[in-house]
Amino acid sequence: MAVKNPSFYSVIIGTELFNGRRKDKHFEFINGELLKRGWEQKANFVIKDDPAFMENVFNLVKKDPNSVMFSFGGIGATPDDYTREVAAKVFSNGIIEQNKVALKLIIDQFKKEAYPHRINMANLPKDALLLKNVINNVPGFGVDERFFFVPGFPEMSRHMVIEALDRFYPKNSKKFSCTFTVIASENDLIEIMRSLPKDLEFSSLPKFVDDKRYVEIYLADYDKKRVEKWCNFFKNEVAKKNITIQ
Image (cartoon, rainbow, N blue to C red):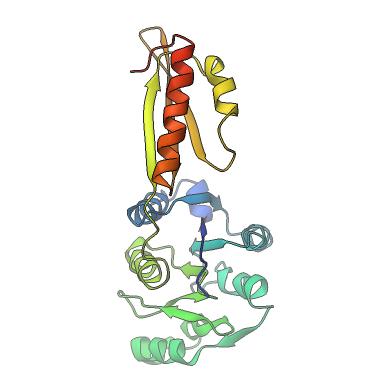
């Protein structure tokens, strides 16, 4: 079942990213697709094809009751493709089964060449939902409308990510924000920062320009009036310190 207030995670799997054989093309894409819909990532993991470590990362994500995950890579038919097995272990009590729809898609696509290896890509976690592969019809899959597993090839995975988001997480409520720059150091503003509500989204970004210290302040929330209230509070407190706001 789709999560009401999701925390999004991405896991990019591929030893080739660490030994320099390939460069990641997934993070920027998934981040952009989420932002277009008003969502943001909570964390991104880039890891090797190590089944024990993959299991640890998947379990870490699963512990978050609001987690929604996109995992890229490792769902093929070669010996170093561990994702289907690890996904079943973590997200479906270790139950892996031959998905009849995936089986038919693979046989229709490859005919006799589906055997003896490609056919194994139909072995998926129990009750997995399928994501369409527009390149070769071998589907990606999801579990519980929350945990999605797609190929490492961007040409295949991007369509699957969009399909999953469009079906289950099409758009978030609008978030309102306030951004302004203070000519000061972060240290000058810490007491004001501490006065903000803990559940208000807040960040400070220091920068140096021509030997001057600047801090970009960002406040955000789904309640517009709340953002306006605390934005004005921050600016008023800054003014009391005789500090300039750009």
